[in-house]
Image 1 (cartoon, one colour):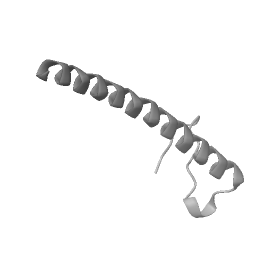
Image 2: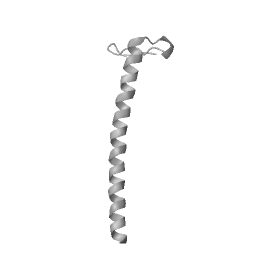
Image 3: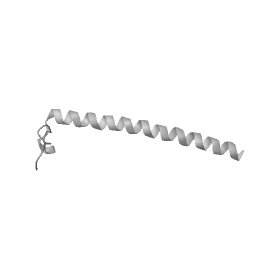
Length: 58
């Protein structure tokens, strides 16, 4: 497998040290926070839509 000069070769997970694990956890946590924000936005949208539907029924 060839890589560009400025690219780091990725180690197999079995060879990860503390630095790689910390970076992986930080990426996971950042992705989780982003997902939470998006899901909260969807929940707010659905809540408002349900409220409008209930108003139209009454």
